[in-house]
Picture 1 (cartoon, helix red, strand yellow):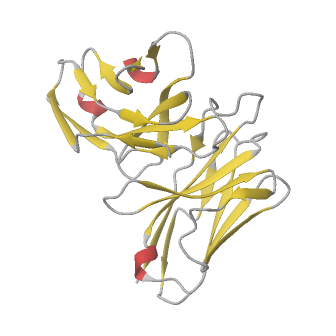
Picture 2: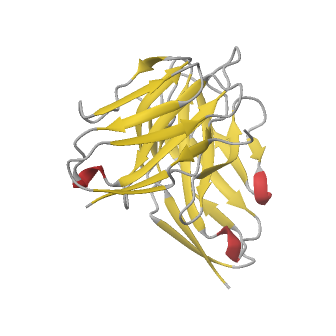
Length: 117
Length: 113
């Protein structure tokens, strides 16, 4: 697609339920990232994928959070037993991986707005 | 460890006046610096980046930023602000070998008519 696509755009869930958030990166982008933005907070890194593997998952806040990527494309972020503090915008992003990686632009989706009630 | 500081939570400027949004960074190694903008209820949009070369970088919507290695700064500027520039601006840094972008806390820009 033309940009990073995320679904659902909005999700309201009850405390204790599991949720899945989906990300479709820009076609051809091998790197994929998940970030979280809580109300009034900055951007918190969660996990980075290169292809289907996740060399950096250091930002996942607890074992209730997991993510996977299949076919080097679509990624799913799963939050189990949701808590109210999980309410946030979950942003997915992707980038290419040429020889010089650090200068690559990372492109963000519109986010999935999660509210836990 | 990499870090980015945006010392101003909010910047207020009148339309037509020049604007500056400040960013300083701390890294080990050569920095790659980025500015993103976030409009209400939207994702982040890429504005510009510094990789190497000319210290003055031009980006989208008339924005530019100047890389200053001695002051470890990468301030965002625009010669003449528009009301439509009102948004949340994020500075970010990355170094070779580290894949994630590290973001500042964001600066809210408010341009008054």
